[in-house]
Image 1 (tube, rainbow, N blue to C red):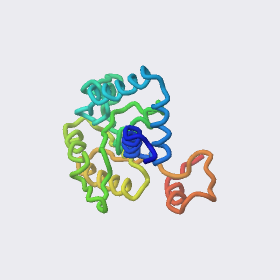
Image 2: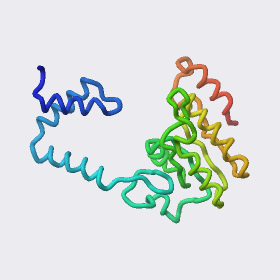
Image 3: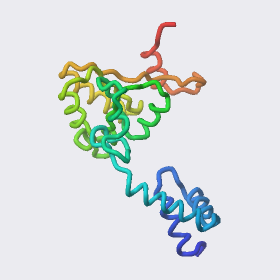
Image 4: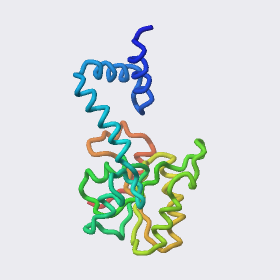
Length: 198
């Protein structure tokens, strides 16, 4: 046995986290072993508090400690705009830009037939219900430019358009600082389709 039982158990738990492999899990576990006991206790307490206090907003499914979340409760935001994202990470990415001032709808996934995830497994019905309540002028679909993200975007468009609400898709294409020669065909095609006047 390479590790003590408790160290091995912690490494295995870290490996369950997304993007954490064997070496990263080992590094994290060894780091925790080396920090002073009070720091380890603070970390453990922060994890317990996160699990105890954090939940999903009943309106948009953003992560929050209050319901509704601060974004949904903010009277200064434009309630006629809903930006649809796959998960809270997408919401955080858009919020970092400080340019969007509307509301959100977090799907908690994408349509993925290969993974047996259909429209009923993500929050499309809740989105339609929000739109049908009225007061929404535009739904902005901000799913990833993957096959699953595009499938989800097309489904949402077909779902919302009969209500008369405008449905738009965020632009896709080449990132700033990106090199054209290293871009794949789909990215270049999307960049050409979404070109703007200068």
